[in-house]
Length: 455
Image (cartoon, rainbow, N blue to C red; front, top):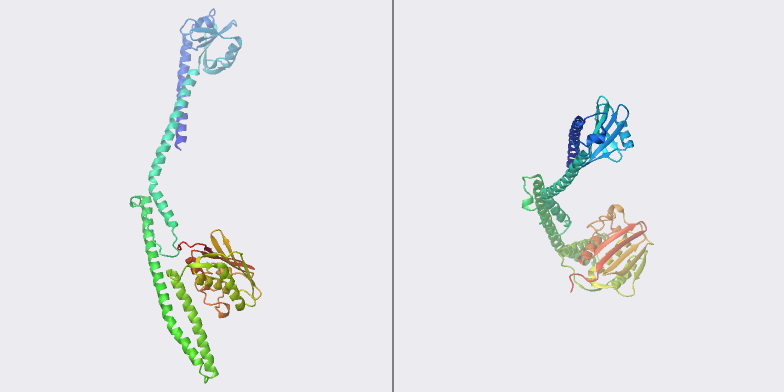
């Protein structure tokens, strides 16, 4: 907009100045015409030779008898016009009004006619002075305008940069906060917009102050959430630990009572039911206690783990438990070893195989593979069953997540198997995931070959 305004001003100034200069030139032309002394005997060259005329003055005279002459002043000399130039001038003008004519060899001229009794004269002055002046003005305006725009651009850039400094501080703070994972763990947001960029006297400063207040609230909420999680984890661990003793007593007394030969069939069935439920409750308590200890990071004992042998043993144990399934083992010739807890990683494999056995129909082919990929060991459990329900795929590894909404015992356990597997894998610094379509489901565990916490 500034450039357009400056261009309009420059063009308007040039147009007005050009008009003023042209009026001055017309005045000079009329004055030159007044200095011309017309006589039938004088030629244009003779009239101009008197020396009263400025450089570039043009004169064409024509007598009533038909004689026409033309000349112009060229510095200290007077040069005669040829007949074609004279004809162009005569054909271009008429009356007493000023005209602009273009001569092939002389350029543009501003001319006026002057009539005497026996002589008609055409007097003119060149437009080079006007065009030269306008060219200089336009060139000067263009240079000054360009320089002014560059200077203005630099000043505006500096002003905008200074003015947007607080906003950049807000953006940088928000970017750093956005990189912080807040979904789990002890999270503390220490990033804040600097105090000098959070001044309430400006709009951007108010945004910075509002962001700081928001971060304060989020940080307080995360601290409260972490505190509640720790309390809940401690409660679960303590409750699970305390429940083990009475459950053990219930199971022991039920086993002792079942040894009495005088029990009636009804009483024996009731005791067997009590014993079965106590065993199930004990398994649930043990799983909850394991999860609580894994959350505290106190359950993993590192040593050398032969993942290949672990997979072989897990498949061998799964065959008797799932005789209606087809179990396939795919391992490399060289064993894949890593640093980890053998018992816990075996639990991961057992949980994945139990999950495949429980949630697929008889005849399903379950393939267990172990391979090395770069610096990772990969344990995969693939089946060609119906696949994972998309409705539960996103929360499959959450605690108490069940693919069977009825929670029937025949279709699964407590809903903690996959969450325990994820907790164990993550405690080893690895990842666990699932890819599933009908007829193609793969649970994949990736573990670092050398855990960061081992020597």
